[in-house]
Structure formats: structure tokens, C-alpha cells
Length: 353
Image 1 (cartoon, rainbow, N blue to C red):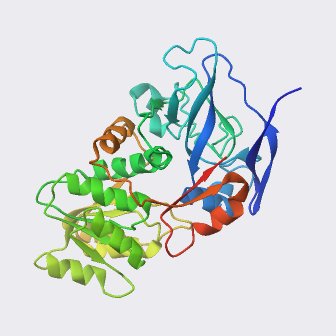
Image 2: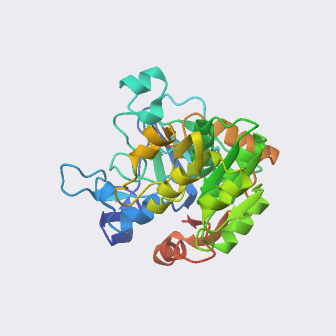
């Protein structure tokens, strides 16, 4: 009889079930982890609420393969090794990158595995069940990293989201003379303020509508913080830059209003980086991009080649983590945990089996 485990299984929008599920077994080249913690991503919340980008409008354009186990911000301890696994041992603490690449498409073969055409992110496919469970299986194609023994559970859970933020900051190609804006100061955006400030630009500006997040932005390196509910952000940025505007605007909020705000705030020849994920299609005046300011629009997807640097940065103390995990819950209390992501003081919420 197959062993069972407890898991949070997604069946449909607003239909998550904490129930018994078959415990994974390690086949050739695979690893099974006992999950020690898993963060809740905005994508997990959007999936629960029936986000169209995840559930689509029909079976044909649906990304999620339900029923499946959510969660991609996990870490855990090795409890089983499949045949041929040599670089890891039972007892190692590991974190896996959030995508399970195919290894065969053009992007995987060129090294850009995060753009794999299979696009299998943990927690959205049945063959890539995620970390909202007692155990999770790592496919032979997974990108795996050892977690230093001195890391707390909170630090280990933050590796994945901070890695995504680091990639977005890298996409901006920040120069020392730049005025850099990070819009959206959740756990990832706040970390991006930290990472951007390490590049020693002229100024880092953080934007959010929540006062507690603005305070976190200051602690993590923002020179100036602005609340769009209380001021005209673009006007304030121009007043700080001799009327020119910012050099870099990194959108990390997922708010449609932030897009037009960013285009307005950017100087001529500025760089706009899109990292946040929207729940709906966004409209903007594309004349601003071309005939107006000749902006450079840059996308940022997942975490690329940043995990090792994030782990090193956390270990050295250069990348801060204190306060980014605002709430912790048991997996069995998932409903309360999901609701907590909407609380005024929420940053990153994590669950433990």
C-alpha cells in the first residue's frame, strides 16, 4: 500500500483541500525532500482566486494542471535519493529553483533554462507538485542548491523570492549615476531595494501605499520613499532629479496604475523593468515609449542565474532578511495563512508542515 502524506491540493478556483495525498518516491536521478517550510507567493493567491493567467478561459489555454499541489518557495531535508544521485546525501538541506526545465528546448540548451518552453513551475503541474505538502519530489532536471546549515527556516524560504528580485535588478543594468525606483515594497520589492543599493547608484526610491512597507524600504536602503496615495509620485521624482525623472523604474507591485506611473516618472531614454505579475491586461500610451521618451522596456522572468549569489549574500549579511517573513502558519491552517497575505502588516507569509 502506497504511503500517504498531508498536502494542500488545488482542484479549482476557491477549491483548495488539505487532505491525504500519495507520498512521492524517488525514481532514477530524483530526490525526495521532507519539506521544512514554504512561502506563499502572490501567484499562489492569484491561483486560488481564479486568476485568468493561471486558469485561462478554457482547458486549451489553462496553465495549471489541476488537481496539483501548490507552492514553489520551499526548502527541505533529503530523505530519499534515487538511483544515480551522487552529489547529495540523506540529511542535506536543499532548495530547488522554481522551474523544472525540460533540458531539450532551444532555451535550455543555450543555458537560458528559466525561459524553457515547457515552463513548468513547481505547484502548477501534476508532474511538478510543489511544497505545500509534507514531502516534495525533485525531478532529475531540477536546479538544486545546498542551504547553509546556519540558515534559519525564514532565510531558506526567502532564497527563491529574493532570487527573482535579484534577476530583475540585474536586468536594469544599474549604473552609479542612476536614480532607481522600485515600485511595490513587498518582500521581493524590499529585497530589490537592498540589492539595488549595493550597486551604489545615485539614489534609490521606494514606492508603496502601505506605511509599514515604506518603513521597511528605508531600513533596506531606500534613500527616499513615496506613497502614491498621498502624492503625485512622478512629480515628486522629477523634483528630486532637476525635472528629468528617474533613470530606472522597476515595477514590482503588479498594479496596472504603476505602469503609467513609471512611464511618467522615467526620464528620456530611461529603462523600465517589468517584474510584477498582473491579474489582468494592462493598457498604456505606447507613444510615450517610442515617439515620446524612447524608453527601453525590459522583462524579468523568474530568477535566472542568481541563486548562488543570493545564498552567498544572505550568508555574508549583505542581503538582509530580518522582518521579511511577517507571519508563519502550520500547513493545516492554510486558510488563515492565505488570508494573512492581505493583512496591512503582511510581508511574506510562510507555512510549515
